[in-house]
Length: 82
Image (cartoon, rainbow, N blue to C red; front, side, top):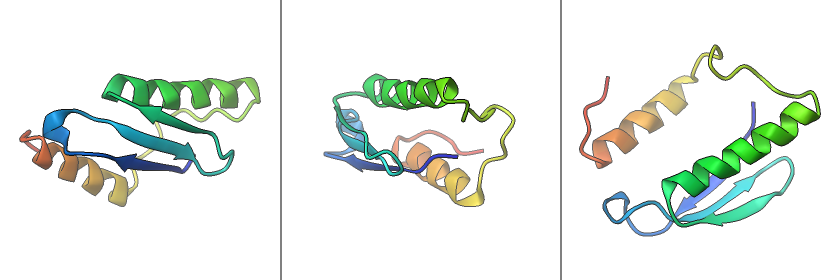
């Protein structure tokens, strides 16, 4: 599992932009949209895979706090939560 610090600038209605940092490595990047944020996660995941540290995120259970945070973002975006 990896820990990231994501700082959003503005509000989700105007799109996603901000900065993201991988806590363990210190790798940091700016993003101007959701796709570039997700690309940063993919890049770090690829680096971990090459180092033999990959984790199967498809089968890993979500932590309760992560689930609550995802629901909060869906609510802010005006989408239904499950």
